Length: 141
Ligand SMILES: [Zn+2]
Ligand SMILES: [Zn+2]
Image 1 (tube, rainbow, N blue to C red):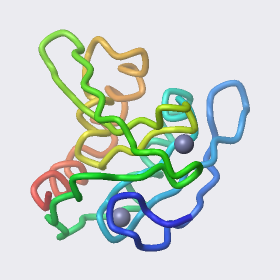
Image 2: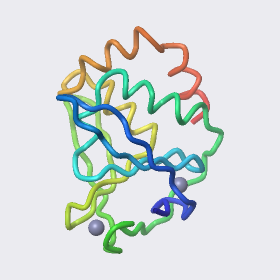
Image 3: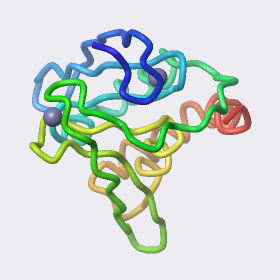
C-alpha cells in the first residue's frame, strides 16, 4: 500500500491488540504517517504502542502533507477530521467510506497522551517507560 501522505510504499506491521487480537497497521517511514483500518489504533496495547513508536524511530521529515489525500483502499478523498478531547485538539484524515484513517506520528502521540482518551492508561505507562524516547521523537518533528 502506498502512503496517502507522500506516495512512498508503506510497511505493514502486525501488532498485538487488546483481547488477543492482531492489529494490522501500515507505517510510512518517509513521512511518519500511519494508516489504520477502521479504528484499530484504539485497540493497541501499551506494549504495541511503544513498539509502534520504536518502529518509527526519530524522524527528521518535516515535509507538509499534500492538500488532497486519497484513501489507499478506495481512492476517495480523505476527509480532514478534527476531534476535541477536553482541551486537546487533534486531527486525522478519514476515509468517507470508513476504510480507515491516516494519522501522523505527532497527532497519534498527541491523541494517545490525551487524558480523556480511552487508551489514556496505556499512554501513561508509555510515558513512564519511554519518556526520553518520546521527547527525542517530538523534538525531531
Ligand atoms: Zn508517507
Ligand atoms: Zn476508502
